[in-house]
Length: 505
Image (cartoon, rainbow, N blue to C red):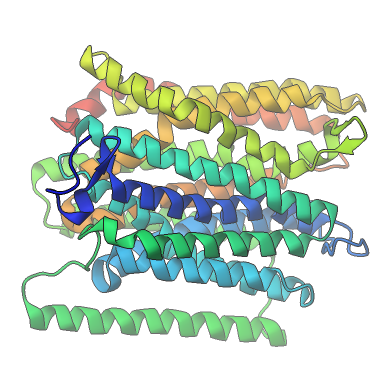
């Protein structure tokens, strides 16, 4: 282990990695505990009977999954704004801090038992704003702790990804237990407490980050930077004011909308936004030829990731509903909360992430490490195989029997190996391929793919009509065709994409 006496604060080492990595590990762990606790609760809370003792709202499955899709989609959509705020105004470190405060506040609002759907929208909106500030920027700081890049950065991201999934494991355990057994609002309160713990830890350990992500980008022209900051804060203020006006109009009934239509419109908007952003950067971003090729690769990875997340994010909607309504959950007199099935994926991640991280290093030493496009193809195919398992589980449900939990366990195992082939690899690839002056924004586009996929996942889950179970196997099979087909395309075009990447490792 390197001596900590001769190194700058942000580069003090522990077990071969900067200590700052572990600061970010725990910050992201608590944020993800909050997020995944909410994800395990939200759809079930929305569809639960309105007159039950747990405080559910009793809305339709179609509307509930659309709200779920909008929430999870907008969480990641806002990361593009959060990256811009960090680049221009706050820097990554302060963005993470303020984002955590918003997340804790939003969960506290959801914990209020009165207010119904309007208060739910307020709480979710505050969480969306906070996650947009925190999520992209904590990942950017991880990348900046490894200026040398290479395999060490990949290994660091794999460790960081374990923190994400440790939080994803802990969140549903406590939130689902208190939410499903006692009252849904208790589950949201647990999520708020978890984020407060994350904030405390981040504040205490922040000095170990050193200068990584400490300040916003400076052009070197002080007067120009001042103008940029002033206009930036004016834009932020205008956006917040618009949110307040929309909330007021909704409250007084002057503005109404259909949830499902809104989710569909948002998905189109997100895709158009991504295309417009990449086109702008390529045409007017002042990039050289090499940078343009690498940005094209990021866009192709964006498309693959969007398809991936449209299937993967079924975990909180269709797969969560399947666990609640069609899976045998009572053992030795204890009914397992449906949300606990969502800890299977992060549990496998915790076990397998170090294995995959080591595997990439070993393969790289032997010049056998698959390229990023090949890893994306592997991830998409494995995701499709997981849904193929659900086709057979759905056929059991059609007969009127409860499916054994093993169907979901096998599905989540395949989804886990798929995720490890795609998600940490994609995160690392963006930090290495993105032009330095667009780093946070490009990281925001990575999460924009999750945004698009999440909204599509919510819309797809709304087609799972409890009154028409015979359609369930066919709907799962459609997801198989889409994800496996996309994976095969990445296999076919892996060599041309590798040429565009160039010498970046």
